[in-house]
Amino acid sequence: MSEEKLVPKLRFIEYSNEWSSYTLGDILTFYSTNSFSREKLNYESGSVKNIHYGDIHTKFPSIVSIENNKEVPFINNDLDLSKFSEDQYLQEGDLIIADASEDYEDIGKAIEVKDINNEKVLAGLHTILARDEKDITVNGFKAYLFSTNNLKTKIKIIANGISVLGISKNNLSKLNVEIPSKNEQQDIVSFISDIDKKIELLERKHQLYIEFKNYLMQQIFTQKLRILCDIQTFVEANLF
Image 1: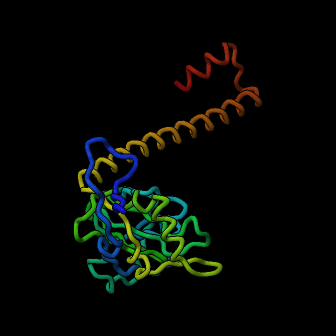
Image 2: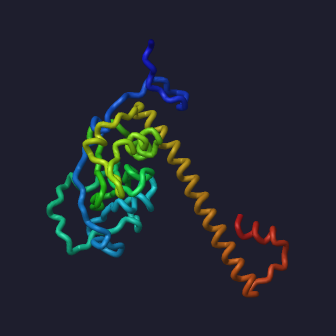
Image 3: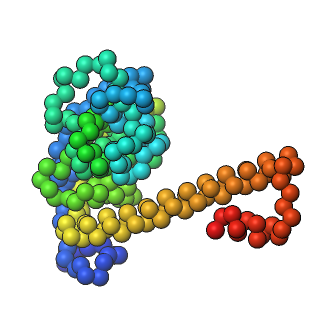
């Protein structure tokens, strides 16, 4: 019986070669993170930013731009950070994995960072910092890899705990993944990134519709606004 080839059912037409099989430990080097609680962070000022696992679960997209990002908190200035080595500060393309969660759906959720631009950032409480020092992946690919059902299912299997689930670096490093050539990775990242941008625009448009509806309701029901023209014409003139 012939061995099944490692090729996806759906791919860009210009590629036909097999994907390569790795363990995550073959690709990623893991670094220690800090254990600062939310109380030791702030959004006003500081010299070092911090990625908190709670934000990975609830706030951040798969790929997070650090530069001028007000959603990434600072570590309070009165804390001693001298014990952290340069290797523990985030680098472009680093992966931050949430190693704890109260439900299976979020265990192992990961983000990849970009646009660090000399800012100092640490990975925080209940996270695993992973770096591709062997240059096997292109930036962005790891984040989308960790979003696939295939890898998420494998992570759920190794998770343990009762009220709070957890995963370890050791068990994570043993998981198998399939990786294409770097050219194909880049095409995948570009394609999915374009879809993410369209989703972001649609979500923003949806929010504007909600805000406009609320404004109209407030104006109409307080008799501050009376629409004398055709309502459809009025809406289209203000939204499109």
